[in-house]
Structures are given as C-alpha cells and as structure tokens.
Image (tube, rainbow, N blue to C red; front, top):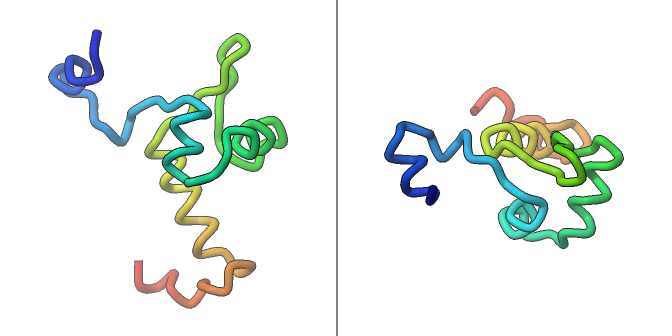
Length: 81
C-alpha cells in the first residue's frame, strides 16, 4: 500500500510513521545523530525489532518543546504559542 493509499483511508500525515533517515532529513541532521539520540532517549522513538520508528506528530511536539525550553533562550515565546 502506498502512502497515498494510507492517506485516502483517513490517516493524517501528522500520524505518519517515520524512519531514522526520514526524521534526519526532516530535522536536517545526520541519521547517525538521530540514531544516537534515539538510543539515549533524547528524542521520542520506538524500537520495533531492530528498527527505530518515530511518529511525526510527536517529533513535532518534541521539537516545539526543545525550541521553547529555557535552555534555548526562546522561553519568552511560550505564551505566544
């Protein structure tokens, strides 16, 4: 089944399941970085057998949290979102 077929059945792109390579491309990082972060539980991921998988909507939420954390210097934007 193609991704278009999945979307036609009502699956939201936000619920899309991504591979390490897809997350790396999405975040513009190397697959090695994403793999390391997944192992260290620094990025939300699930290991299914030997493969890591990521839900796009959760990665987006995690990224928002990273951007709005006090360590980022953008904490003041929290009230604006």
